[in-house]
Image (cartoon, rainbow, N blue to C red):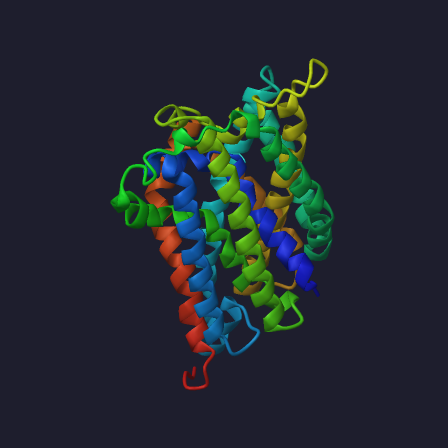
Length: 352
């Protein structure tokens, strides 16, 4: 069983990991240098929806278990397949973009496919170790990552210019409050909480851990985006494909420590590996429950091979981002609405 603090650590790292890749640029493109405000709005929306959703849950059963109880295999298999596709959609872009980043930043002479292969092997091994091992490593590593992030943002403070935040509403209220809804996709990993329920002692642990994770990861993403917007004026801020990496290049403590990005890349790599191990495990667990398999481990290899193959289909990072824009809204709606619907099904009035 997972303790509440382990659930919280899992979700904080999983949600925030994507902000280290290209995701800040999505916010900038939509809202200009009001991206920090967009992040705050999105975090509040997700927090409210999460609170409402858990207020209707009456049993400690995940979505697949509820589907099996209410509709048998005829209902469980389509629901489980949909959940797997949502998780795969979230994960595929990460396993394509991250090796590209490593290739650009550290290993310029190494083929991206080789980096992806090594990355997939490491993540698959993590998934093989099981959810308890994954959660404990998350719990041990999170304070280190949090300390590095706080120090990083403090070291950037000499470069902050408040005039770069103007106009305060960025590209306008329409982008902030309407088209900006699709950027709640950053929090789409919250769907994992509705899969992890069998591993928690109580429903309260999942609820409390989820609320805490959304608040902390949302705050970390908020201050990261705020720092970026304070340093780079719009539209210059829109030009960088990897915004956080661009920030790390600005840290210079002395002539003996002017490559902070290399140190940050080490922390970053561990975070993404932990994220990937957790995601691969979750997808295999979904397949195990959906098709009533005895073990999840035989599914690791086919899942990893399939996802890696699909991740190589787009020609470039730009193509991946373009595809993400198409699926972003659909996944955001599904992640917020699907758990609520199944939460309602746990009420006594709904029978099989």
